Length: 627
Image (cartoon, rainbow, N blue to C red; front, side):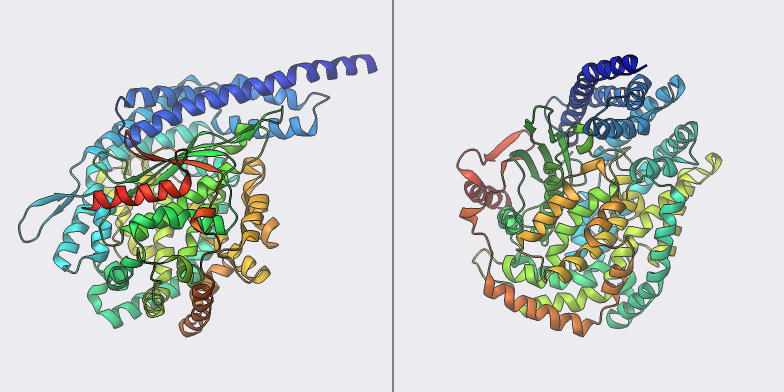
């Protein structure tokens, strides 16, 4: 018996390393092929094709859904002689393959292919629709992206123009509703074939590791606790600004239109790249020799949402060799437009936060460092949202919100923005909540009820219930709900923001500061980032903060007295102005090669002259674009 056991262990010790290497290599290849085509198609690059994207997506899905891979992994897991590290790798492979395994069902695989084709068709149609607004005076149609329409709603002094932009946003829903309803039906059919209640239950279980019922137990608590705060905020806004402030084309303008314009000089788009890199350098963030392609400007035919993907996942080979990430990062900025600099910078901090996270996943397989299931949506978004939250801190504004002439944003503008935004911060929370409640109700509809008209009506009903009325961002205009990768995803933003508030409270208690504190970057790297998919999101939050995830910190932030907050933030602002930025631009080293591109055109490359040269060239290029 002992001889037989030894023989079995020897077989495993000889064959398992080769199997793990084979799986890692195959995964890396299909992942990269798909992501390269995803980027080319979304950016509208020359030679890109939807057919090639679908082919590489089908190859990716086929590899992940191959039951032979899952069977082999489980066979090795039950074998003697598996080392702890090998077991760690096999478990993430098992979790990943199990997310996509259809039990060898040909019909399920064919259905998945059909859904992918319909999603591709809808993407092409949505990308080509005539989006924009009709000028209320000249009656001329002006093409604008959804991002540009929302920016104009927030900043235009002309209510009729804001209303026209809102009508433009509302045109998206009727345009996509019929095709989208058919996709919803097929997604539900696919999920039920896998034994799930519906597609939402399928997606949340695969990505978060717990089901729809558990998720909405958490969300229902947050919804209930913030409902009276929303009612008070809407009442206050109507009393201060008039009842028309609650009209969806007016709300953002009434809350921030004036302050957005006044703050615009202190968020120059030209400086966004520099401010982002210095902010992260101040936190001690390093990208571990990665490479990043940045495509930042809006243009016709470009995908209508910022994102950050990784065609090359970071991982460490069995030889100890480090494989750094390659990152594709896009935003939708329009130089010269009011608010464009602030929007661009927030996107850089957000998507750059994703990139920092994925660049620092240090595990022995690329399965740990990819953004699809079983990667927790909440886990991924927690990192990016924590970092973009810094823009709301006076401790950050006093250091980093400066004009091109180097003038720091005045305190009276910071205070004015706090008075305009803090009492209404709950509205952003409720806007986030509306999306998962809409998708939950959507996938719970019966097939016979899934018509374009009823889907549109449902979207309006959910916004009425959760947001108190129509929103400047109609639910069907949110691009996440259309594509397979990001559908039933938005709850991740809610859970992430909950964990952001809890994480911020923890750091402020432990260190007394976050901005320009390298200890914060060190803790994020070691506790949140390094494990990748190897540890559950809820466990990581508790591991760092010492407490289970709850809404307590978020609700406490919303309920904080305005005058007390202003007094505290003023002290932080004065200290920040005195201290300045911790890391001068000439000393910034993020451990990353940055290439700024505009579609097929290379604008600048940090490999030629360093990061400072890229920031200077970027400023010149943007100035030319703006004029």
